[in-house]
Image (tube, rainbow, N blue to C red; front, side, top):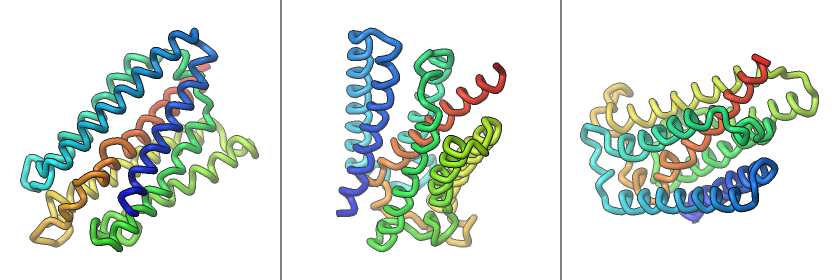
Length: 235
């Protein structure tokens, strides 16, 4: 049941991203272009998930010696793609036209991730230090997406500058979580342990969908939002 939760959340967020892109693109592009780009996104996601599935099930990532395997083979490639894609399309009309509220409310899915983390601790698949039982308070940021979105778009009491700062805070929170996972796994002495705090299950499928897709998707949306807001503040 827990594994289905990670898979279901990944499918849900993939669907939301595709729908968000499709609805935005069809206002700006021809039907043929929208169909072509949508197919490319679906194919790209399929092969990325296939790669994630195969490398996770190979057992290769379960070696926690240095160099750190799962960050280098999952997180770094995802970040390289994000950087390349957004740099190349930074002036794209689609990037400009994605509804700002959608980008903010998207981050609320982090509530579900943290809930799955707690269930994973109970099942013995994850160590508590990387949940809000330990040092990961990302669930609060997920909740803030709902509050900030309401205050910014319904009550109009948070400005674009405030939203920009909120997005930077969101990236900082993700950076700390990456630090948390990396150090508890590969540098446990930082936390007073002689052995890694990570379980072998943590880098198996579907748990690796978090560093391979769900976390990078949050980074992607933050950066898109930042690009939008900075452009609005300059205009």
